[in-house]
Image 1: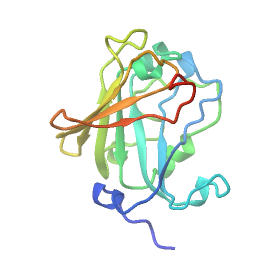
Image 2: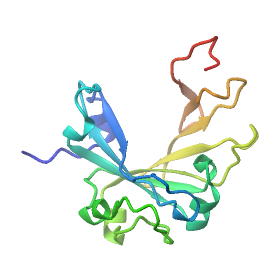
Image 3: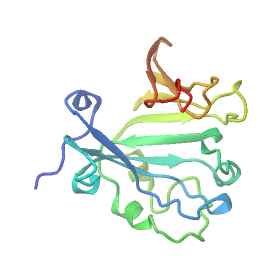
Image 4: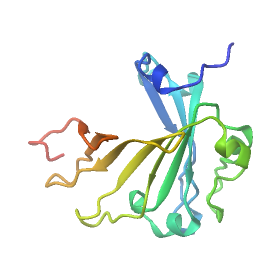
Length: 194
């Protein structure tokens, strides 16, 4: 089997479905045991519940960079912590995948995921998604992510929408010029309340 092609913005337009699957176990991992969260990206045209996403090849991966204090202090509101997500067009390094243990009583004190070398950290980076610390308790400092290309140029921004329907997560997506392009939200019922 041939290795998948690099997953670039140009290829994204040709792809019908993408599955972003969290690869880090979060079972019983809160407080000081909260690890960095990593994801695998899989190109999965014709995906449905009957054909598990694990059957598709990885085309990219994303790793989280945040301090132990930010991970520990964010508790049940991880969207409030200062964080940087780095998106790579290559497959997840074996050392990082092997370190994705399922031991619930471990403490990651470093900013980077266990097993991630400096070479792998900067290899095949296509974009970063980052934000400072924000507040999720009110609508004045809502969580957001700024997306930048590999050279640090702003591509766009995704902002959490705070309104009267607090049980429905909604995000407005802006381009690099600050123009609103999309609203991302799930289907709702009961007049849009849930």
